[in-house]
Every structure is written in C-alpha cells, then in structure tokens.
Length: 295
Image (cartoon, rainbow, N blue to C red; front, top):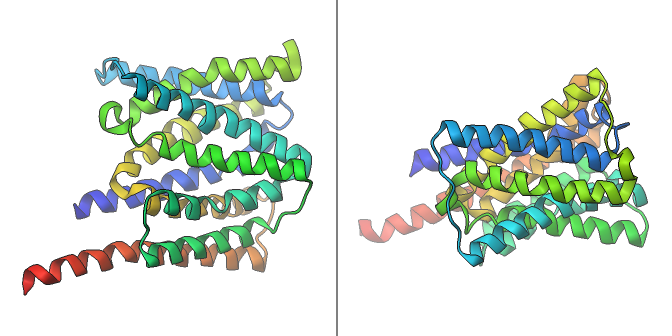
C-alpha cells in the first residue's frame, strides 16, 4: 500500500509537471492554426497509444452504455471543450485569467472527492493560493471569465469521468480511446474556426513542438496521471495540479524565455507547502486508524 501511494505521488507530480511545460513549448507552435494543431497532436498521440496497446496485448474492451457515456464525456469535456475554452478565454482576456481560474482545480477536486479531511482541504486552499500567485491575478472580460470557468469544468471532468473507467480499461486504454475520439472532434472545430486552412506543412520547429506535445504532454503525462489517480483519489491527486504553473515558471527559466519574479517563487513555495499539508492528511488518518487496534 505504501509503495502504491508513493508511486501514485511520484506519478501525479511528474504528470502535472509535464503538463506545465506546455506553456514553454507552445511558443514553438504558436503560429500554427491552433485547432488543426491540436488535432495533429492528438492524432500522433493516438497512433502511439494504439500501437502500445497492440504491443502489450491489450484487447479492445466492450463497455456498458454508462461507461461509453463516461468516455464520451471525458473526451468531449476533458479534452476537446477544455482546449477550446482555454484558447477562447486567452483570446478574450489573455492567459492570466484562465491560469488563475485553473489554479482552483485542487480545491474543486478535493470537494468533488466527497467529504475531504480538513487538512486536505487546507492543503488544497494553500495550493490554490500559490498557483494563483504564481500565475498572476487575472483580470479580463465577462466572456473570458465564462470560457475560463468552462476550462475548469473540462479539467475536473478529465479526472472525475476517468475514475469509473480505469478499473476496467486501465490507464493505457483510457488514454488511447479518449485521444482517438478527440481527433475527429477537434478536426470539426478546426474546420469551423479556420476552414481548410486548419492544416499546413509545419516548420521544423513546429514539428518538434508537436512531437513534444504529443509524446510527452499527452502520451506520457496522460498515462502517469491515469495510473496515479486510482491510487491517490481525486482529492490528493488534485493537489498536484498546482505544479502546472510552477512547471511553466521552471520551463520559462530553463528556455531563457522569462526569469521568475519574487512573486513566482513565493507562489511556487506555497504550492509545495500546500501539497505537503494535503498529503499529511492521509498519514494522520492512517495513524488514527491504527491506534484503536493497538489498544
């Protein structure tokens, strides 16, 4: 159990850190038609994941109607609508507002996980404060706020709708099926947004950027997150979403795009402190459960 929890913690932390590097890499593909680019990203990821399922001998699993709806909702809300909402919120108000709203993901998942322990709730609150500080307090238009709230719904759906699927399908198949379904959906959005101009031959830098987004941010990060989610539960796993802006800060510094400010570093420190506070709730609960049996 301890090894499973440890592996879950390491996997969730790595997954959210990798997702956070997206901000630094996105500059490489910023000039490419955005929805067409997302369709390409998920297409490459889907091909890789389907090959992995074949190599590992993971056969197609027939799902119940409820499970099929969960997978469809996961794809539509957690992948497609999330990407649309982030893009449109950024267009309306800039990246700070949507980044700040998404900083509340740990708190939202802690509440969605049932009746969270007070220490877990406190930790989630500290993570939210740190992520908000690291992202920058956003301001913008009502349209931008509505899209940002939509992105929050998508991010929470990405985890919650996967929970009933993971015991039967496992992390590889959930990742493979959802990314495959996302490709035609994003292609339709791309056609509506840019018509036939949604696709063009990428430059070398764009190709490298899409390869990183497909392999690292999608294939690897999705697997790590879905592998960790059942071990930690949505409340504890959600704490690590606070690492996304921290990873963006680190990536920006490494690439020389932007050096962190004092507020960035303070926010990163709060995120780490909040994660430690939230994880300590599990240890405290375990000790309380042991004491009666020892008496």
